Image (tube, rainbow, N blue to C red; front, side, top):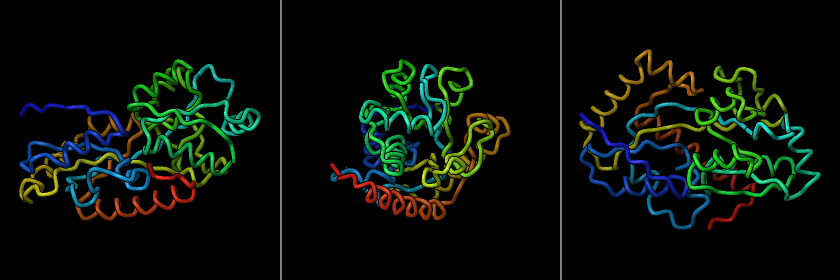
Length: 263
């Protein structure tokens, strides 16, 4: 069957998410979403959907770390040098995000909390514009999902300072982990999941889950995702629900510790 991909950037993916929350539960509309949905309730006062009530998890696809990246032209070659420069010039450095309320913002917010540096948040309408600004040196730092930046690092267009996972990533084996550099709180793993509107009948939900898992099991699909630094991991609805509840609680605790006030 032909499938229409409708990219809806904006508000950290909240616009597209809200559209699917209100879609008919007929099996013809699915939502491919990153883990930013677990951050929204802690940073926005008026989220137009309920992350738990309004969606039915079909299956998780992958989980992934972020790469802490700077422009290739940057004088910074390590996290230590980044912190030293930020402390020498408080408020002079900017960091990009794919939108307010995304992991690309709160990775940098965590770094600020742990080190006491002052760097200015510049939110963009999605990761693409954020990366473009970084490539143009309009911003100096980005916590980018590995799949979106690893090839630019390999091409020498960006420089990676750290990866936000417990172990080094096979797609970027030379990049040290933030934990090994002394920042264990920067262990941030995002994920991608397929959701359906909440009241999708169980037979349809099961059918979609079966087909998506079969595609993810194909060697060529698995290999391509691994090359991008993504770890394939599927789930049942119940397994993913537990993971999402855990991440909702973790991000709330982090955002409360940062002292970020919902807007």
